[in-house]
Length: 217
Image (tube, rainbow, N blue to C red; front, side, top):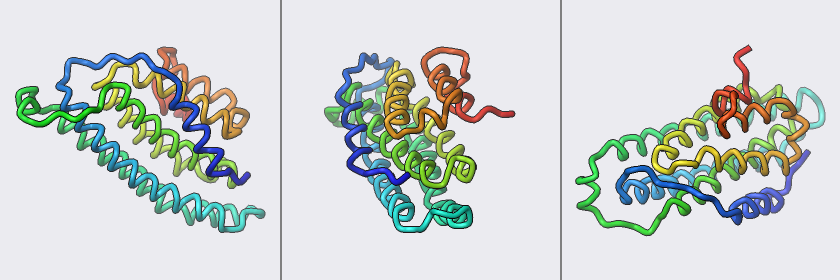
């Protein structure tokens, strides 16, 4: 299943248009500005990596099992780069948010509000979900679970980090993932798993992002 980039972008834009109610925690406004700047830099890298992965998926044959195996192997390095980029950004944001409010008070403020930050996070989630969806739809989830699991783990870490700045970010992202995964035709593929994913994010018993999608057993 080859997925149109315009289709994926349209889904992401439709999600962005949905109003969200968020509350910032007791952090300096400059901390949110700083996180937004780092998300912008991350988004540029994810855009480049996603384009490379999507191009590989679109250009390589994927009819036979052997071809699908080869395709999964070909995208593995870029998928690892995506995981590393998410982890690096999380570490950088964690370092900055541990600084004192007095430190931030000496710095110029930008204009990124809570809704601005969630919009950037939504865009990032949309890009990653679209790339993962295209890959799974082409080669099947069995061949790429080992590649997707670490990326979702890193994404989980980033979202938890951002939720420390803006309360409700994790709940909001659950709706984004639901809309994008369903729109990409992965609802049946993830039947029984997606419910656990959203349950964890929305306060149910799923135990978090990874616990719902990839059970330990």
